[in-house]
Amino acid sequence: MHAKSMSAQLVALLLSLSQLLSLPAAEAAAPKRSAEAEAAFVDEVHGKYGVPKDVLRRGLADARYQQSIIDAITRPAESMPWSKYRPIFMNDKRIQGGRDFLRENRELLLSVERDTGVPASIIVAIIGVETNYGSITGKYRVLDALYTLGFHYPKRAEFFRSELGHLFALANEEHVDPNSVMGSYAGAMGWGQFMPSSYRAYAKDGDGDGDRDLWTSKDDIFRSIANYFVAHKWRAGEPVAEPAVRAPGAAALNAGNKNLKPDLDLAKLGERGYRPKEAMGRDWPANLITLEGDTGPEYWITFHNFYVISRYNRSPLYSLAVYQLAQAIAAGDPANGGPVAAQ
Ligand SMILES: [Ca+2]
Image 1 (tube, protein in one colour):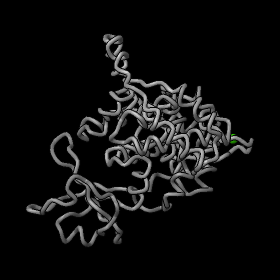
Image 2: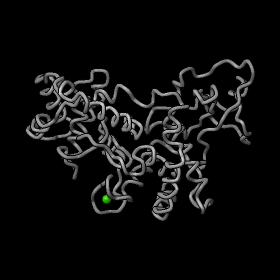
Image 3: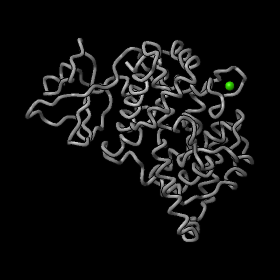
Image 4: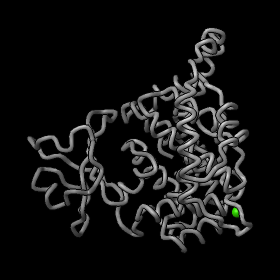
């Protein structure tokens, strides 16, 4: 979630391949460690979470800088135009994979949907976008990823250093070994790619065995993803996003898609020249995003639940890809009427 995702991992894979061609130079670039910054980190994490200082010092000493992590985060897939981003996920293989996944896990997914109100199709789409249905959960040590970004990527150091603190706290609390746990280049873990802070806050022990296992327990994985949506106030039965029509001469709205909150509503959008392609029967709080489609700008009216998806990953491209994949998965479900579509 957040800074990771399957597409990001594809980019990371390409980068690591290119790195094979220039390995010595790339690896020679490891920057100096700052004893001062590391000591401050140890004090802070010990104070916040009670992790013993010697454990923290050993953990940091074991962390390795990886240039490929810096390279990967500076080229995220979310900077692509929608016309290039969409087909990474909205293709026959990914859609069929989601339908198969739904069929194979139907009973469990439907029980989670019944308990939480989060559609099975949304849970499957998240897993499909994040890790291609659990098949690519990351090839970096989470410790290395969070150390590299927390101490050697000033732009987002504060965030990743905080996540590194959460990783040590998590290791202190449950069966997650920071020396071996693997994840994305941004330190996201498991089928749903939870960052350590999200793992601590939202992961669920769905099968009741006493562990929150986001790698091998489907019960834990599905319930944890659903719980993330519940915690961010998913509203069962409400719309997510609808294609919009722009009236000739209507002024641009929400430049850069900076605001995904539904601060307007359908009536206000209508006054400004944007309406849903298909009438919705009632008003809803809404906003508008504009994407670069295959044949020009694409307008989408987005609702509260779109904002909730964007809490998983702030990108509007990500959020719309998850929604469209969920719809495609649900539409192909032989028992449709069974798992509800995403609205
Ligand atoms: Ca469990």
